[in-house]
Amino acid sequence: MIEVIIYLSSGLFLGWSLGANDAANIFGTAVGSKMVKFSTAALIMTIFVILGSVVSGAGASHTLGALGQVGTLPAAFVVAFAAAVAVYWMTKLGLPVSTSHSIVGGIIGWNLYSGLATDLGVLREIVGAWIFSPVLSAFFAVVLYFIFKKWLNNAKIHLLHLDFYTRWGLLIVGAFGAYSLGANNIANVMGVFIGIMEIPAYNIGFLTFSGAQQLFLLGGIAISVGVVSYSKKVMLTVGTNIMDISPIGAFIVVLASSTTLFIFASAALKNFLIMLGLPSLPLVPVSSSQAVVGAVLGLGIAKGGRNINFKLLGKIGVGWILTPITAAVISFILLFFMQNVFIRSVV
Amino acid sequence: MPHILFGRSRELEIEITEYLDLVNQGALTFKRDLKRYIKKDFEIFEEALTDIKEIENDADEHQKDIKYKLYKYMLIPDSRADVLNIIEEIDTITDLAKEVIYEISIEKPIIPAKLESDFLELVENSAEAVDMLVKAVRSFFEEIAQVNDYVNKVHFFEHEADKNEERLKRRIFSEECQEVEIAYKLQLRYFIEEIAALSDQAEMISEEVLVAAVKRKI
Image (cartoon, rainbow over all chains, first blue to last red; front, side, top):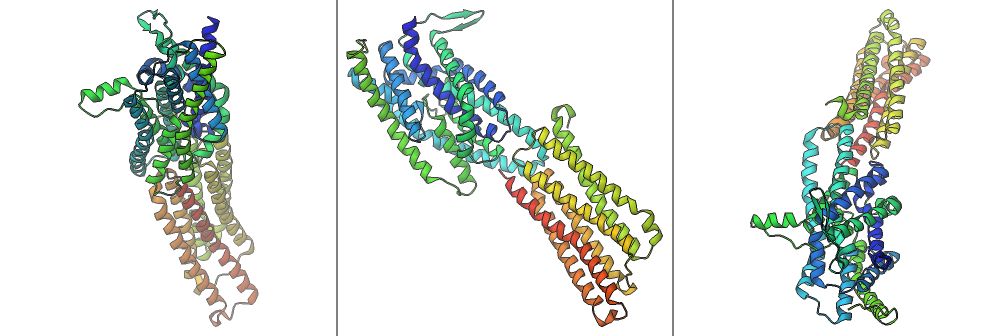
């Protein structure tokens, strides 16, 4: 049991850092501008990240499993640990990083070490989603900007009522954002452990929680701990610096990026789109930070293309390429150590 | 809108509306009192002298309350500084109006009959500029798209008041008024400038309202 907890710890650490960093994407401006109290934001994040993880976490995890199914618990520990180290390192270098990119790098590192071929079709799907997600997020932001601009110009809402609506709007899209983050990114935290650990289903009355859902619950709690323990600092520094936008702008950015994350996470939505004969998107863990940056850029373009930070775009590009490669290399090296120094079977 | 839903926002909204009503009343009372004085209805002028003081005191109370509530309830964080600034600045108009009326009551300047219509026009334009400013501020809260129109009207009336001011001064210091002693001339110039100052102040605040309105865009 203790060994299992130790092996899971790297995934939980990744979850913690995800919560600490990504909560600012959702509530950064709201808390930074004092529209929403941090305690309220943290409570909503906690509830909805866990709900999203447990209810809708399976889709994106399945895609990660298809990319490469890590064979043993020690190997899963190493893959998640390598991803966490890559995230930490890139953050230190000041590059915007994503746990999604690093865990994929970690899995590819495992594929290389174990000599198993990486499914290039799945990899293409994942990388395609990474490129497409900020673009889609920007598109949503542009559309939402024009809808809200038109509505606000015609609606004649008193500034104080608008303030009231904006606060509630930020809470509601924040809840949606937290749900989408949990649904989309829990795969990064717990995905590698799912195929290995056989946990019996657990029944509470008419609800049944599968083994995977129990792991997602654990991962969701780890994310929440990250939110509660560390994200305030990130929200008050990074959150307000990156997005120097109005509360209504923040509402649009969070709604656009959360919708993007939700589209890449929800199996129900995918099935619904297929049923309607519409094109659907693969369920892939994407980066919430990049979805947010995409939405901020979209907002900038909609407002007339001023204030576009090309330096930031360059940094994102560098982070995009460096993170998975770094994680893959670290994963490969650590797997070697795990196998040969700690004498644990990793393949 | 139901009270329960908006609570504190509604409370503050009422307070701001009442405050702007008072500023409006202040401008109207200023106009009424000056018309009475210019038309030499001195008795009625003195009888109603305290009206403007009451309005000014009431407006001061509202201003303090608005400041307190904005901070206590943490409302409109991104527009708060702008709103407070506008509320504070606009209060100077009511103060100025009261000051002019009281100084006239104390100094009792003699306005030559031939200058009456020019004086009335100056008072009218100055008060109109304040009226348009109040409308601009109301739009800032309720219908942002209208702010620009009202600010333009403030500019128009301020410009008109400027022209009245200059014309009056030129007439006073021309041969037309050579019978008026220089001390009285200087006193009249002082009051002309004070009355016109109301529209200058309104114009200055309207610019700030316009900037705040631009900042409110998404």
